[in-house]
Length: 86
Image 1: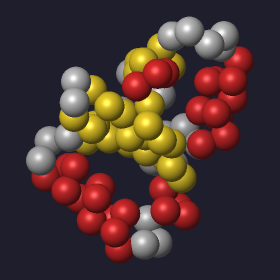
Image 2 (image 1 turned 90 degrees about the vertical axis):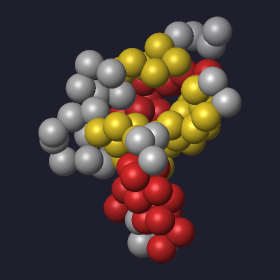
Image 3 (image 1 turned 135 degrees about the vertical axis):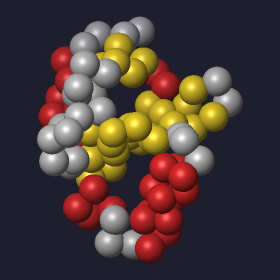
Image 4 (image 1 turned 90 degrees about the horizontal axis):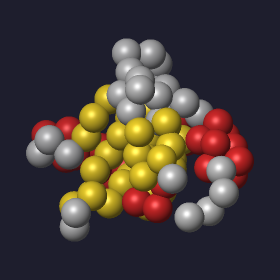
């Protein structure tokens, strides 16, 4: 099953390691450093020019990749919940 995370970007649901709210998680320096490192090393992608609300950590071929999404965590959770499990 694939999940639309915004900006016509699809991610395999079983590869998602976590979905995080940008407002609450970026309060901590460790999270800001993680996102900055992912951007500098090329392991992040902003999927839309809209205001980012969440980020997803996805495992892709033994690497972790970060998608910055305009969708809220509740919207992503509902999309995952509606679909049948693989």
